[in-house]
Length: 193
Image (cartoon, rainbow, N blue to C red; front, top):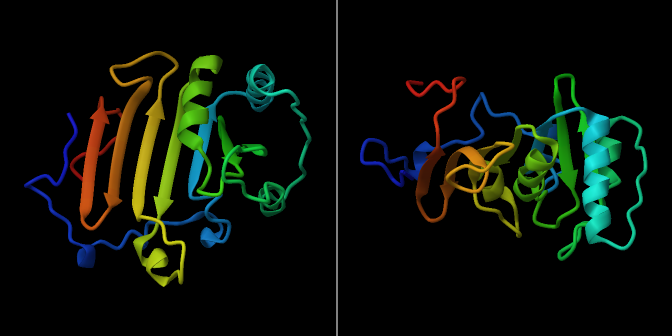
């Protein structure tokens, strides 16, 4: 059941600093909106790419794959230009863990939820979409401000009560702060903190 503006906790805009000491934005948000949302897949990097290319080949006339060398900053720049309609460039980056990071060239940011949510089913793995938009940083932007938010979505390889979302934890600002929980609490959560 979603919780919205719980009576036990009502944050105000003045008291919410999403860019506090524990929040770190990738490359200090220099590559926003590309890095505003990041997807992660718990699968082998090569297998992720093979399954993604097969899926895209069913949808698009032409799919081209190209290896991109480190560093990550250079790889992110290869996603440019950003597009408003159809995403045309996709980046899968192996991490130091079992996870593969996903980015694309959408003008409003990476469409992590749609892609990694569907890929979780295709790969029979869990996936995660993470969104981090700092209220403090957005207040400094002269134009094109985004709504501040922190969102964590865990996707399962099978259907759940809500598509294949196993857990969603979201805090968003839209004239006031909203907090929402969906799905089952996970073993790694610390609800008392």
